Image (cartoon, rainbow, N blue to C red):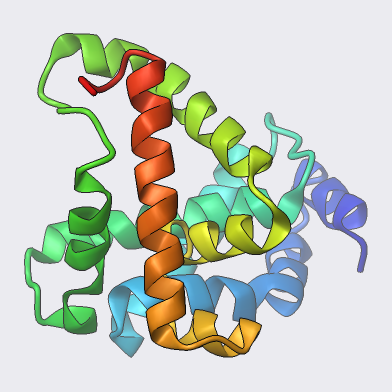
Length: 187
């Protein structure tokens, strides 16, 4: 079923919308949640919460890109579940590791100013990723949005894990410079 048809089912409040969403995007959502949670019960709960949130957001929202819309929701829910669990044992601590890797690039989030400028920061990061070549953009978003393992990214591009690690390090440095240039970090 096409995305537009699925969205129309939501607008008609037809429960088949959830079923069609699961058929089309269930594996995609499960992968995102699995990369963060690493626990089948939590993944199932995350997917259930994702579909409920989709039901509550559509309408009034009419997503332009359904895949991105649901991907953002499942990621948000999975990260919240991870934070709530407060354990580094799940997923081998992958989320903590990802946040540690990006920590040097991101400004301190304890100030009121940061909260106010959060949307602007997100737009700068989106622009940064859009300006990357296709491979680098894929590697960056795979790691820091979808929480994919470095070895999986390496396989996708026929690289070594070391090559991917080096690319990610360079991209973080570029992002850090960009954020400093935009006034988000002291250089």
